Length: 159
Image (cartoon, rainbow, N blue to C red; front, side):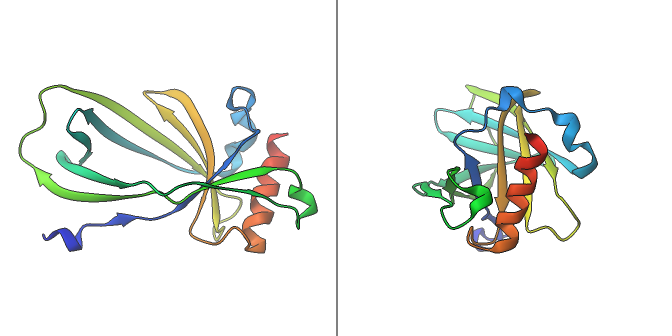
């Protein structure tokens, strides 16, 4: 398999500046639960690696500068600062040997959607089973009305 046929993961993360994860009541989200995705990462001095089906791949992280948006045109989301992160990750070649010094981290992402065809998912991120972050994820533009509505609905549920 050549490098060109390996997948690239491109999704926009939407983070909320004012959302404090310590006060999120996950029970309120249960009926919107879709799935949990577990991934194992290895962090070392030589890079970040991912384990997929008992095989290891080096990751190439393309960090894109985040942008900040305040939804002034949307009364429901007014004064909420959204941070848009379009960083993407490319899976490089498979490795036959891992670096000796590394740290293994289990990443769990619980995904929630308002309905089957939602353009947005709310993601709860845990590292080694400890709550770490909450963010929205979409392939659409933030200006899309359905994206804004889903974000507002989730925020209403959580407040």
